[in-house]
Length: 388
Image (cartoon, rainbow, N blue to C red; front, side, top):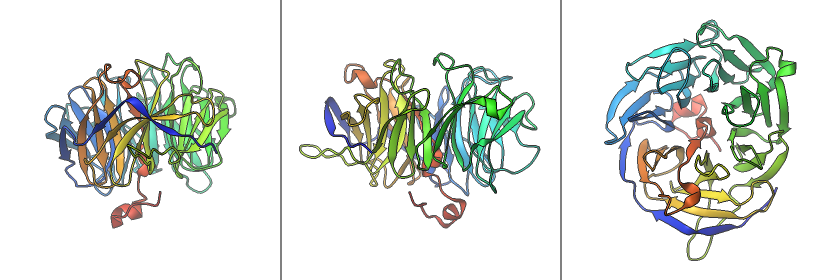
């Protein structure tokens, strides 16, 4: 496990108060945030499990979707799925379904299930061509499954892969069409410590798995890093460790994300990772968003994700907007704002960074998995935070 120093970036910026703030209707934890054309969507923790829609300009609540029975486990904005035009919402739930929501109505337009069988789904994604939906399940007995659907035939999966992972599947994420990866490559990660890439079009699971990396710890979230060179994948564990991997899943870097600290004129100490982001304008830069137990947020980057011990830089902090744990965030680069959600039920909109202020962090799409700080159902009902 490597250790690295944290250095204040030359164009460091500190923001003390959000531009605007609101609360979700259920007064629950804010687990996920997604961006629609003129609105933000936020999913609430159980027992509410609803999805609230807010006007981007005013943050006024305009709609509440029913979400999922038991718990809504993930929420994404998607631009392409067969049968629908324009941006829509996708969610998964412990009720065993993946739903595609029509923002113009109060209901889902597509609901994918496993012939009515209730197998809790923890994550989901759709392929770039909109023709394949994947979802990962929790572990039941000795099985944790990846389901694949054709959204035109939502009643049952086209195929199921049951040997890729042996514990809760916490992430499924398709590679972008221009990523250089084979078409319909699916990244998956699990509490079993494995990071895997698979060919989602291959029915034979033995032939479908492309590469496997074993980190040896429970993985809570993972995502793609679309750099022209260097690591292509990042992952984070339940123990606040962070890693990067090659496209063939060779481990490049592994460290405790709480290790890089800054003391002196300015102090920053990380307590946990919230999520990572990619920068469309500078694809070689991965933004790493961390936070403190008091609710302050920071943006870090690493100078070389390919090697251990490379220096880390502190670019931004956003403070005094949340009380307690920050569970979700979204970088809305079209509007140059950061949107965050926490255990205090609040959604805050913060000022972003202009190109003149910092060239590396112009615009970042946050890739975070709400299950990172999701609760066990019993803990949610008791109003307790699960042990991190």
